[in-house]
Length: 330
Image (cartoon, helix red, strand yellow):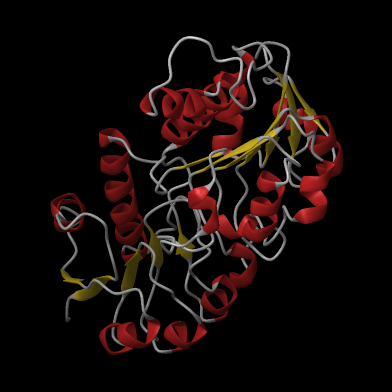
């Protein structure tokens, strides 16, 4: 019997010793092929005989799926799977697996860090000092800020990361609102989160933090009309995916002071073009989609992503399959 062909489509770390170690100790005969392309047309010649894919950011669309009759699993380096056509994969009997507990601590820590930076206006004070300022800050924009304790944090998306944010934020004396159409209040019994509609959350929150997946329901979820509901003193944090927010509308809201500030770890286009308007505003913090990073998180991610492949090739179900409905599985 010929070895299983496992293709890594693209990756951030050129070292694959962790993945190879998991595959090598599985007892399976596996041929690991490493590519570095996100383009579906470039992928197709290399994946037609693949038994499994490991994907970071490559686009796995219907055309790619239809060229892989042997594929038994598509395993994603991460939580979000918006780069994979889940319906097409399901129709062709291919489970799509992710690592649902990846970077819970890291992204929730980064979110709380953004809350602190926005609350205490760290980004403004830093620029003030770098431009030669010191001492009196009364003339600075958005200064002085309100006290953090007693303010309201609205969390959109109450999956693993959203719940971790709620747990940590509760220790800061913040009041918590949540919006997630797939979560019931009894599922949040350990957290003091009030479930509300999205509009209500936007109207009442001092900080709105996004942790929802990108799909047809959340594409453009926060646009001009939603931003207009927010308090002029409120701040938006996006830790989900760039296209969850209509970026042009966010720019207008920041320029026109519809909201006070924003902190973004994701953008519609990554990396952004040098002339991206948001890069030139002084009331926005932008980090390079890096909130998931830590030494421990990377090790877990790489090992668990490879383990999904081993499970599928061994005839087992990977522990987290995200397209069960398309597969017709209950």
